[in-house]
Amino acid sequence: MAVCVAVIAKENYPLYIRSVPTENELKFHYTVHTSLDVVDEKISAMGKALVDQRELYLGLLYPTEDYKVYGYVTNSKVKFVMVVDSSNTALRDNEIRSMFRKLHNSYTDIMCNPFYNPGDRIHSRAFDNMVNSMMMQVC
Amino acid sequence: MSRQAGRGTESKKMYWYLPFISPSASMHLMNSELFTLTYGALVTQLCKDYENDEDVNKQLDKMGYNIGVRLIEDFLARSNVGRCHDFRETADVIAKIAFKMYLGITPSITNWSPGGDEFSLILENNPLVDFVELPDNHSTLIYSNLLCGVLRGALEMVQMAVDVKFVQDTLKGDSVTEIRMKFIRRIEDNLPAGEE
Image (tube, one colour):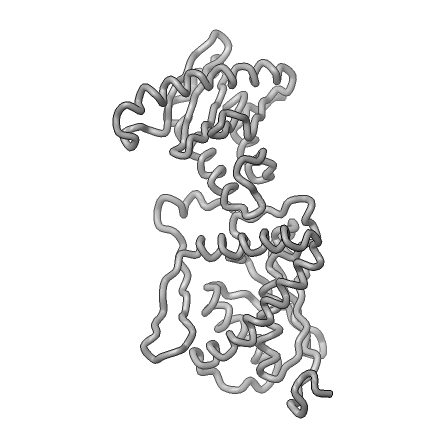
């Protein structure tokens, strides 16, 4: 279960950030912002080879003592960043990949909404529901 | 509704018939996403041009009317149905043949009024509204109003004046999309419209 999910546009501004619990939100915003550097580093490192050899899933960006940060970048340079709690060790790589795939599919659905202008903040109810299902359940 | 199963495997295709211009014209398979996106672009452009949901609804109805008066010819040529004897037959033809031919869906017919002149078409899924979420500032927009115009225009060409409107819409939170059709009168073609 994720603790924070963020969608970052190509120009590196956030399209969607959601974290639970809602206090300490600023800390997660800061974490996501710093993780963008790691994302850029990974993209440029692999970018020397042909573009289609690069995988969309970037893997663990960096771990801290409280949580781990995972990244995923699409071919249109839209980045998905997910922060998960370190204490939740049961989370396997496959599960993270499938969560990113779900995010990517929901993002594509939003892009197809004719009322959505690319570059706007994301206000979709369907996207919120999907992210809710992925977030940690806080009692 | 989620398209996760569809994407990545094979995309949904719909049968798209060319207008009946020659006997050799044939049926094409068209990707339904292109159709949905085109309709979506049309509606959003109208919203930007008119700024007012009521005007957009009227324009969609007018456009649908223009499509309907032409589409009926193609439909009659292609489907070879005979004259309908009463409104119930008309309803059956609309739901089972026309909708299936042009949109690939078969709505169900319910809620007949006691006099037999009003009924409802229930659409479980509407291909025009895949992926669409109405923003809050367009809450009175009837997104699929083009369909009302098409039905009205087509039936007018076969001498039936009908009133078509949406009573339920999945975009506004209802579970199904319901279109109510009411027979007003038979049109006697004594005078062309406008020459009273």
